[in-house]
Length: 196
Image (tube, rainbow, N blue to C red):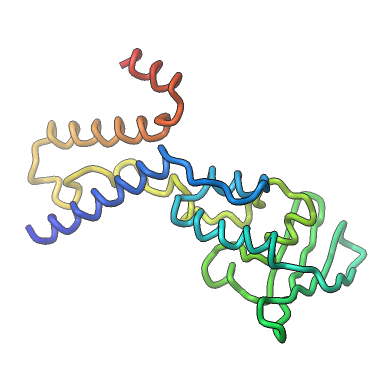
């Protein structure tokens, strides 16, 4: 019973966070299209972390040098960016071959946490990208990571309830997810209510 209670608390907290991510919008700090794109795809907590680096990429990053290294790529740059510490420089490697984009930074934030760093955002902004490249969007950081069936209330011991009770819980989970997805759009919500 203690386990079920603890899981129920986690589910409730997760539902509140999901609802917050789908129905509210944090304030944007820059005019970058990349920031708007990040707001659409990431949860609030992840977006707020990314927003800090986006802001710092605009106001704290400066390009020191650019070296074009490989003529086989459409673009291949090795950039040197100073950090907030005067003796540290970060090297950002950007390459593009057709639609494929590769960016790496010596600060290794993407490798460690799966989030683009301010240095990578600086290069994306410099290259006039309006969206985060899809190969840098990790599914575990997105808004739609929780599968529908995981939001059922008593999925740990489904044999305790009747089949009818399990179906009712599934219906509630589907209804809650549907409302969360269209909660910001008044017209879609009105249509949905009318259909029900």
